[in-house]
Amino acid sequence: MKTLRLVSIKDDIREIQPAAMREKIAARYVHLSINTFRQKVHDGEIVAHRRGKQRLFLKWDLDSYLNSLPLDDPATRDNDCPTSSPTNPKERRNHGR
Image (tube, rainbow, N blue to C red; front, side, top):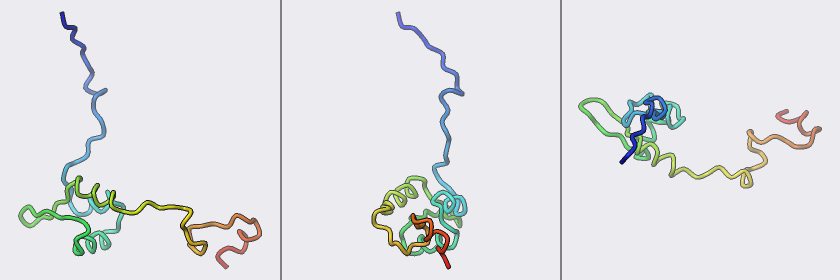
């Protein structure tokens, strides 16, 4: 005899994300300004789908774009990079002057 197990719906719900997004939400999803996002769409780096006059962006396509980006390797960073901070305390005081 099979035993039935009741599962609360709340326990099974994960974060729900839309399969298609409009431009502003899609730009936020890939962490780009709206102008940079539009340029990448224009250049063909990000795929847009039309539904009437609206452009929609599929989560699948946005994830593919994000996966195509190179990983940030701290070992290959330039020392002059503004995000790097000096490790020597004396250099820290003069950093950025």
